[in-house]
Each structure stands twice: as structure tokens, then as C-alpha cells.
Length: 228
Ligand SMILES: Nc1ncnc2c1ncn2[C@@H]1O[C@H](COP(=O)(O)OP(=O)(O)OP(=O)(O)O)[C@@H](O)[C@H]1O
Image: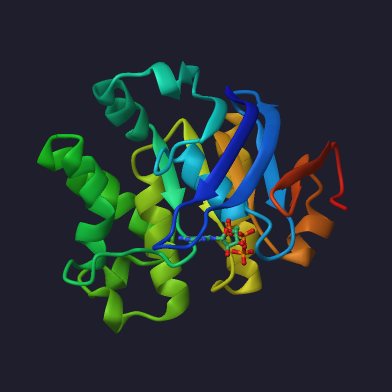
């Protein structure tokens, strides 16, 4: 379960006056729920994903992620919680000096998993995403779509309970985007909460699902089908 009550958030930049980026957001997503996250550029979609990924904290209000109220949680609880969250960043954030394989394996290594199962699971997900042949390539030797699929593999390899995706299809061909969407839906049917920020009109039109709609940091409404 994800629950926000009256959450406000501002970016505190260098010397700039902080501007309210998210305004009094209250919403909830049940475990296993799938939500599109939509709104014009600058509406606050990435900022909301940052809060849910525990990379930033609300200035105000309460934020519950996977049942844990984050403001009351201890540092260790937050670290454990973070290991249950998969995040696909808009700019991929791959480590440039590591191979595709080692980028994907990293969260499993950080979680202290046995090397034999790391090898197996990393190979499996790379194969599934059609990247078996690129396993030893570094990110700068890969295309944009391949890099995006590495970022997707890294987010999925830990089988997260919450998957957050920021524009995960923008470098993908249409057939790959549909395949990814099917995967997200399967994950959600199997109990993973999935929140996908997108501008992809085709996906939104062809795959109606409840949407969290933001405008200028405020929630417009949550719909049960098509987005506004
Ligand atoms: N690191 C930052 N420092 C200061 N302001 C920021 C920072 N990141 C985002 N903002 C501001 O916060 C607001 C919301 O940005 P955010 O990236 O969350 O929007 P978005 O809906 O994800 O946009 P896009 O669709 O273009 O990715 C914008 O006004 C943006 O300029």
C-alpha cells in the first residue's frame, strides 16, 4: 500500500527560493495496483517518484510506502524498504564503468545474495529483455534503447514489491514498449504495485488504467480509465 496524506514537497536549490513542487497530495494505491502517472512537463511526476523511492522527504504531510510510515521509520528500516523498491530512472543512471551484466547484478550484490543465484537471475533477465549478447558491453557501447532495457532489468532483477518507472518506454520501439507494458501488468497481477510516469499517448489510449493526474504539483483527480 502507498498512501500520501497532504504531502507537500519543494526542491531546495542553490540560493533559489524553494518553490512548492508538490501541493497537498493525498492519494493511495493498494498493493498490486497499477497506476499511470501523467501530467504536463514540470507537473511534478518525477518529484513524486523521488519521494516514493525515498530519495527525498516530504516537507509536510505523511508518506506511507509498502505499509511503512516513512517519517517515523528508522534509517535501517528505510534502507531495507528501499531494497524492495525498483526504480527505472528517466536518464537510466547506469554506472559507466560497469558492464551491462554488472549494472544489472549490482542490486543483488548489494543485497548480499549468493553469487551463483546472482549469475543465474541476471542472465535470465538479460535474456528476457533480449540483451544476452550485450551482457559484457559497457553502457557507452550500447544504443539508447539497450541502455533503457538495462535500466529496466536492474529495476526488476530484485523482484521488487513496488516498481516505479519514469518514462520507461521513451527509447524503446513500439513492440518493446508493449512487451514491457504486458510485463508491468503481470507484475501487478502478481502483487507488485506499479506506478509508471509517461507521456506516451498511444500506451495511455490503448491500455486504459487508473491514472494519477498532476498539474502544477497538485492532484487533478484519480481516474478509473482514460486520462484527462
Ligand atoms: N533538482 C531540482 N531542483 C530544483 N527544481 C527542480 C528540480 N527538479 C525538478 N525541479 C522543478 O520541479 C518541478 C517539477 O519537476 P518534475 O521533474 O518533477 O516534473 P515532471 O512532471 O516529471 O516533468 P517531465 O515530464 O518534464 O519529466 C519543475 O518546476 C522543475 O523545474
